[in-house]
Length: 565
Image (cartoon, rainbow, N blue to C red; front, side, top):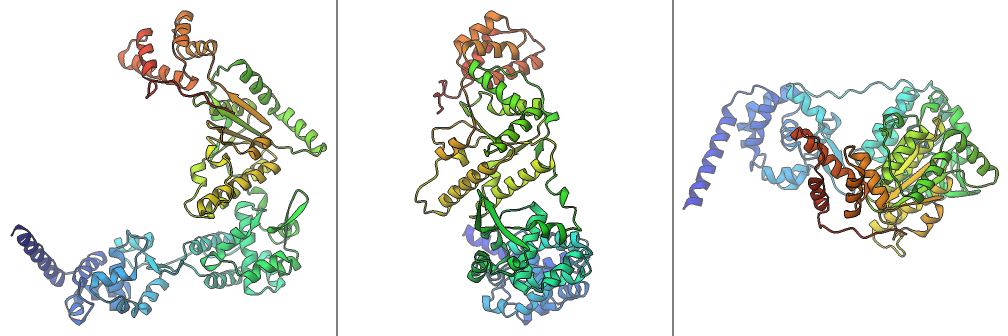
């Protein structure tokens, strides 16, 4: 009985809302949309619905200069605007229609798409829509949305616009053919530029025209000199390159090779048939209007050496000797001299190092202090951001990362340090016979890193806690391998006294002997003591309280297992 009463109450409320929607005087577009959506529910979009919603539809249609049906459809899309994948079937279910009934209205939806009120994604054999944020902003201001774009007037603005078109293509909101058409239109807009004039003289077909523009875009945007088939896939529908294009690129039958606009990437004296780059002549002539020398100079994401705080780190003897040696070599004068000698001897000039050992032993902080001492900025790699849930994207991310680092080395007075912090996730043993997409992706990422380490011109430092599963191929490529052991009793005592100035030598020795803690754990305890001293106003040393904090530092109350090679 109670459920019946609730149902009757809901029906009564629904009826009242519909009556309000019929009689209410619309005050703005969104309010009229609200009433239209209310009346459209289970209406089958029949004549009765249009009669009841007539007042609301006319108001919104007049403001937006749309037909009545286009206005109704837009109101249904806007009502679901938080969803970035609005399906036709959802609109059909809400209005009580067959999906085919909504599909018959495709011409009206196409008008909304042409006016940019909705964007359609047609990838993966599915069709869904979204309402862009600028549309919602205009509607909130009770104004129709008018799509405007900055004019394309030169080569730089052409590539800026092309970058946005590529993003639309990745979102499946632009087809391959539509992208090709837009490129031809934009080239006409800048027909008098050096770039457009030179491209026009090549007399390419539409396919080669788009392919070259995309390769030029990859160079202009990322200074990419290692363009592979997985990159080129982005401009094709369903990310599938036609076989004849692959064949023509591999066999040099492509017009891009014939016109000497591209060449194969050379690795270890061998030309790679699946990797391409613009020729130097192309860069210097066709892209002469762009300030190419500035590419790769962005400091975004860099940790600047002059922002790093000086810290006194306490090492065991073996660690200290190796770190001092590495710091000395990475000083500007010695590093340049050593690199020159290595090149003369036909050896790899890059420095790849790995810092490994137990957590809290100062691996990452050591990198920071080396950077501060040698005046080198740090490009820190966030492995979680590199790894994408989309197969193929992770490989592109890691390639782009090394491309950006190469550009920084080329355009910086001092080569920055490329820091792979907590690199366990990308340096593990490669899987043989990998079958799943994820395993193949992991192997592919590792292969790219191995190749990049071979040709590295700068400084790469990886830190890791877990080295038992380090791939042997990586181990061979690390020139310096520095193991960070947990501090000895003597080193622990020195750390205690460095971090807690009020400790006596006897107290520091006592804590060092009682508790086998890492430097990071001692720092945590020192910080807790300092916080408590600030809150209580008592800065005196309470050795018993500190000892209690030491015992509580580890969640399981036991020492961690020592790990390493």
